[in-house]
Image (cartoon, rainbow, N blue to C red; front, side):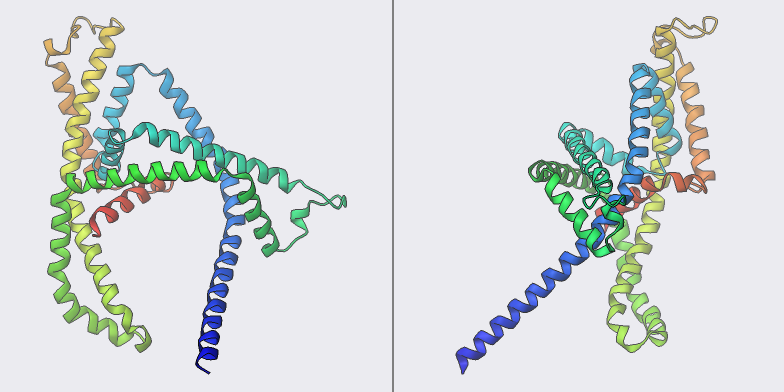
Length: 329
């Protein structure tokens, strides 16, 4: 009897495991087809923008590029402090491997999208209607999932994701050191308000929340306190970063422009010497740009206004994700 019970228990566990795997497979299959169609629609435009930006980058003179980067830091450095810092950290922590990994993933995505486009035109039964238009959503999802598994190069994708993970880990560690005081302030604020939040906020929420959801209250309170701590600490850090990046970017832009003018033999009626160290004009222009850059960010409330935030939402998302990643622990 004991053996039978053990076998039945083992069989039920195997059935439950198989059921979970089947459910996970169905969820994955249903998500792949919409994802492919979404990427198919967005990817060509993304490639066009990147290609155009790279073409402009290749045409710009070295000093002109530095002047442009200086302007970006001057007017936007405080809005995306961790994003810019992450790019700098990635540049010194495996940038070549990161570029190669992104290029490999882009090529794999292009192959899959092209194969998906060809698959959309297949008409095996020769009735004049594409096969993908004659099957239900579940069959379409399964078909696209199989296409991805057949056409992709798993070894290349695995290697690329490995390189990206190593670079990301190095970036997170570098940012935790760079923003250690901000992280400490954030966690300190969260810890300070956690006690009062449990005493005053939790009973209020519990009074309006159904009993079956009360188990979520400690987690919600913890998340809320961390969010408040992050908001306050990072606002202080944003002000510091805005001032620092404005001065750095303003001077970088002004000095790069002086060098560019010298190479182009533009002297502005003798005001510009060949060497920027022989004049104070670059410092004057640089500090004026710094003041304008900081004032610009201050007037924006250190945030991108509507409708520009709709265009720059990837940067906004990346900035907040990085902040949460390096602060949440």
